Image (tube, rainbow, N blue to C red; front, side, top):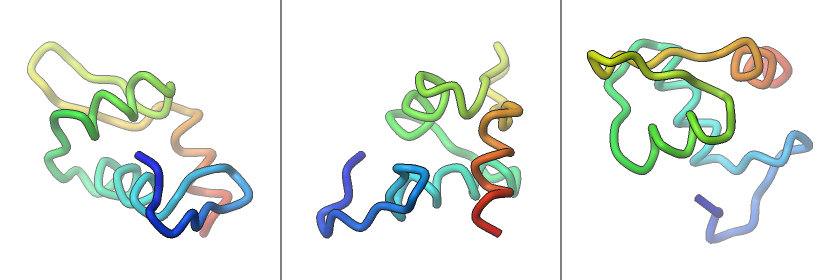
Length: 66
């Protein structure tokens, strides 16, 4: 999930990664590699029914950027 431009914020996330977290926060469907990345980094957790939501860590990252 690295940005082609290398454009990363102080938190180490690139625009695509921030977009994934923002989509999860909005309740949009996030699946596949994007969901796996968010969960593996501890920014989100996924339920058995495939619902995904931000963890406290994920919310802190987004709140720090707003």
